Image 1 (cartoon, rainbow, N blue to C red):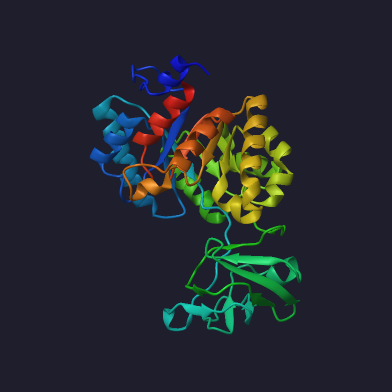
Image 2 (image 1 turned 120 degrees about the horizontal axis):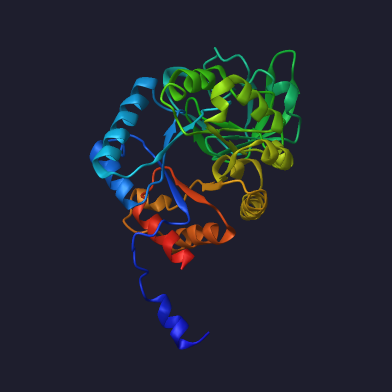
Length: 348
């Protein structure tokens, strides 16, 4: 590479009003839902506003949407509206006195599917009734974003219990999320809450797209369109593959979906973390071939929640996603200004 090429790296690319090739999705949460903050996000490059229905009531999200519309009117900048469904989930139960419990490496603990039981150091509950039927000895149960790993020792479907051995020492609080790597889970992609959120809030507000959590097969998209009825033609369906079953059925999901999201968070709980980069590259490549828009999400510039500058690894992550061919990058709790600059530099 010549000196001229090297020197060119040091020149900042002008923000001359050209439409960015890579779009930005921003989550409108508690710290970013006011009119002034949304105006800043719009000016910094937000193209899609994400409403995360894992949290908040319809009234809460309606107030945020009203603020978004006011901000768009004030700035003259438009953004699409995305409803991100909560989807099916498995959680640990409540604990005695509400206090976290100490789990120690090597200790055995019983998991019961009786969700009314308040847990302690010897027994905890989980919300998935078919747990003793679907897991088997040797499987791993991950709790609290993977911070706690439990190895299945034995299963007793009659009593609704699973005996596990703790693989690390950690504190477990109430109502923590659970992942079952490699296990085919018998839960609907669209829950009753999701249907109410879509038909009771999304459709009346003329949203632009729905991000569907934990899509596992192509028929999931067919069922969602059936629920939407005549509204299916005007709302883009974006599939989020977040477990091994979805990865196996990726091609049939891609045929049925309008767009795709590489949701690296939960997927990283389900497949080896060192294979996430390969899954990302292959999924984006296949979406590009199919002409389907693709979003790369989770932990993009996450350090910027607390820091004004991203880490070098995060900046490289954004650039690699753009070079892979992603159409859009998504922020959850981070900032959009630096992301816009990273995308612009990646395009050159």
